[in-house]
Image (cartoon, rainbow, N blue to C red; front, side, top):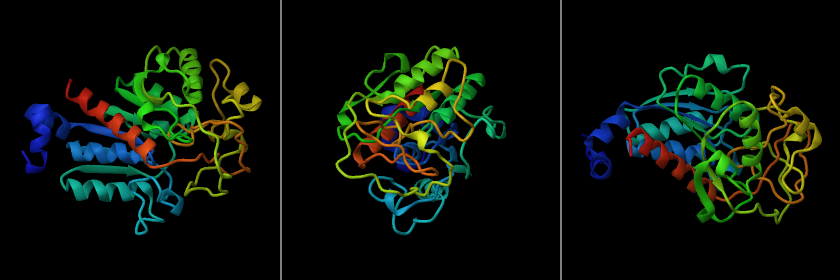
Length: 294
């Protein structure tokens, strides 16, 4: 066993460390939440990664994303994360995909060799497809709910999606998963009410290359605009672009008096490092414990 994992073995046992070394974990979304998931999994000894994200590191990521430094601005987030993982564990195997996961390209992803899927993506369309596909192939999956417009990391909880409350994204996911026959899903969500932003949202793409329409914003009170709600009727889905969905990582935050962004822009929530980071660490902890049978 490598010396760097000896203290991990004191809690997980040598067998647990070996299980993690053999495990192949896919992290979809390498942002404020997903970046900390991948970091913690690498430090825990996970040996095989699939990292999926279409974005590049932007200056606006510096306040919270673990991959974001002045040196990595402009890099694909997946590549920046791969470099971090290999700097921690040079023996890790890291595959990257610089794309946005959607129903249109879902067939390009092989789930058969995965041991765990982490959903840290930021549209309902992608989340639903990812969860359904993981279940179809019998791969355990854990999903992140909204972490933006929140300041109290202590309000984060692990729960089944049907036991969640407060979080508007979780409410939408409950309805849509029920309509698709999904009876359970482990999630990390916050019981903190979303805060009203103290300053206007910046008009920046945040390094995002995806086309997104103004429908992405949640209206005041945390409900979807009529167009988004209609698209999410039972058995339905959002348009292929994922435009009408809120984000599941940070942009999934809803809050009072949020306005829809201009066409081609995401709804931008306020975010600080400690809430998405804490959510990512909790997600990683659940993955590690499940893989080790704890």
